[in-house]
Length: 172
Image (cartoon, rainbow, N blue to C red; front, top):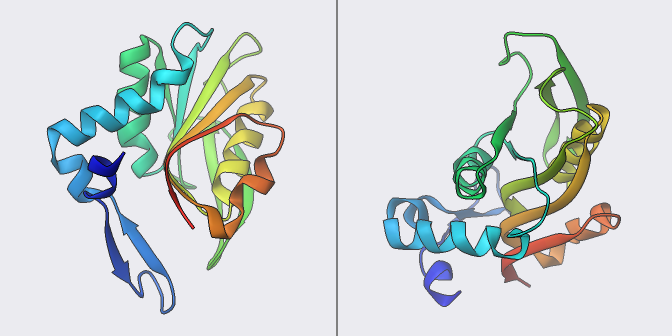
């Protein structure tokens, strides 16, 4: 995991003063660390009955689509409002610096789906919790959530107590 951590840089005061942004772009730029992160994200879920992977806009699309490809299942994009062309379900939620929503097509999942939710970062847990609620609103079961980075000091895991969580890197 040290190889992955070495490829994540801190950007102070982004997107607002007092926040230290964990920038994963050097990690995804390097093919070896991108491959390593993808394989480490999916490792606990090999052999499980995952039927789809859902990822949050935007960085969750990177890792989510790669994990879906490796698992041989489809990818479900969880989008910001107004980005999907068909009828959608929507879940509103709070961020540490505002509020927003996530949307998915009404026919993206069904009651037979076992979904792995992927994102780059677990911070306060608002986006991840909204993602779980959206997947469940579509009738599917959340099998687990997986993250490249978890900011332990923000206690986002507490909002996801009923779900299995797998994080590669932890920052205290």
